[in-house]
Length: 201
Image: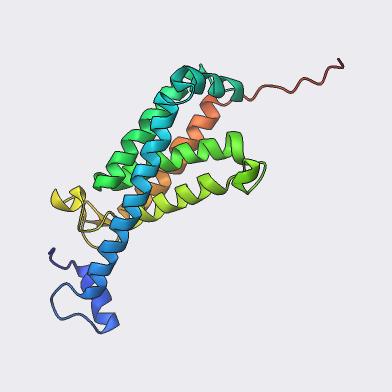
């Protein structure tokens, strides 16, 4: 079990449960984070795997990106999205560099949400519902940290609540700032939606 950091000790004192040892509420917190990672990681990985190896594979995915107007070409974005989702999915599952993994997912979901899903909410209408839930889930994981049962904790990269590299709020900042920033820059640099054909037939 990990030693309590100052932030966790303070929370324990406020709740009246701290006695110098890891308490049940911390074990529950770690279990909840592990369960969230167990769902989010494989889901994101499978999303990327499907783009690369199933259905139309990379060629079909590239054509889809081309049809949306992603520059310089759809193949670049097909590989970028697939590899980001597969890599970040594995990292989330293992709890490795968790804020960066979560930020990667958020950036992809932001691009997908704006280019494809922003015209409706429900996923049954190809709306933003699915990407919003995934992005929010990954934000929570990245901001809080992967918990004790993770490679981040094993390698001493995180400890306590929202404490990455011994810096409070750093995980939160990386997850939100890098995720939104990378997604926004991708849209500004690469998204050129095709103009609707208004000419009379």
